[in-house]
Length: 590
Image (cartoon, rainbow, N blue to C red; front, side, top):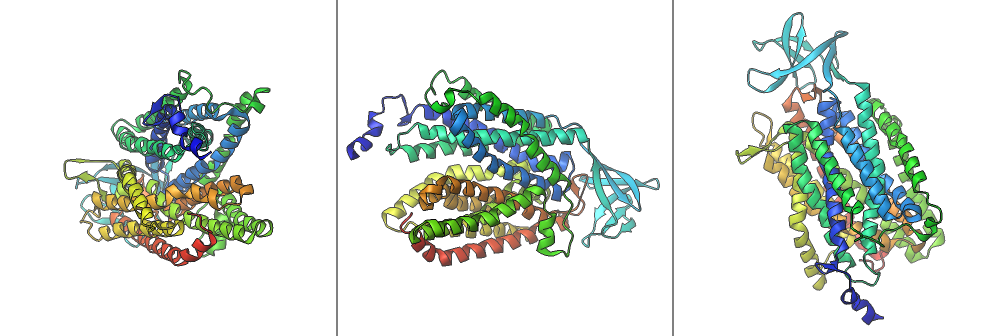
């Protein structure tokens, strides 16, 4: 049997691509273009919400967190439907079309929302214009005077005349900014996000399943094949996070989202028009051929769009938590999605452990405890790492000098490409490093890698906080401080991301591996949602989508980043301390 397994790759008579089945090239390219669309849209989302629809930071960050959370929940359902009825190939094609429709709908956002401010019980229109210093400023007309809005360090607002004198000072809370938005176009935006969530549920799990179907279980090329496949993720995101924000700034939001839609359509076309190259891979199960339920599934899926739409609407309309009501009041103020995730996670994990204690052996129970502990720490890591799409993007827009060596400037959305760039450059080095350490018996175990990752993500934030101490009179830090954060975060990601799914399959009791995979993705979904909440703590007051006091903005971001940086490093340190115990409970799993 050993000889047959070892000879698997040699006996493969299919056309080859770098020593792998040639079909891998098509699936690699499909994933690359799908991620091109996904990450291109992600680079724009929080800016689109806060600058086009002019939602405040709390709403924008909350919506971003809710969207990313649902993106990680729906693949469980899409994978189940594909396994039982559709087959991976049809699920991927359907998901690609639905996602591309969502991206296209984002192109139709209507006119930019009209900002206004309310004080003294009167509504005043807000205009954005150049100040005498040549920067953008916000202005209101009050009693026939055109006055500039300037925030003060204590939260009050000055209304300043052209000669620089403060005509009026409004106490904190006495000046409220908002915007007039078209309910129709807000609804279109929510529908677009809902379509993307549903489509992603069909696409994301099943493209990976098709890659797995290329290899026999005894084929030792499987891990290498998935490594090549996942490189497509970073290559796709690298290109889109440069191009989509560029087009959005140069031509308008429609151009950035349109390019994301085009990338998604290319992904669909690669599977739809495969010339028979994927025949026999990802086909519907034989049990489903007698009665084709695909049309019913497609119709129900479109009808199910109402569920994320309602969850997004609830998130959009959720009131801000009332100060002084404690953690209980905060949890009660959470939108429906937040409450559901919190209850499911808090009740589900202990319930599974109780079942494991009763149904498994002592060793199995200990392995499950180790898995659950690591899942909880995984939530912490991704909560902070995913600030990239929310608070860090807003920080880049407001308090970062985006000039590259004085030659040209990039946009705030484009700063997200640093992560993909560093992953592409560092992944081969980390892989070689782990192999070299393993040969010497020095490769750290999974708990240690998780601990290093948490310390690393904290160190990245603290590095950026250090950079804020060098901010100039414009209250902006150099771009390379932000790039340094992404470098440190990318190294941390390479310590935790590649081992998570493998760890779950090895530590779980065999009878509930599928459930534990669901718990793993639930943990990432919770992390995405909580990440939106963390970003809300970094919210700053804006008028017309722009901050009125960059000094306050810089100090707010620095304060929040310092807090989460220290907390993450401390939590990582705790995990490193308990890692010997977890290693014993893992009973040899590496």
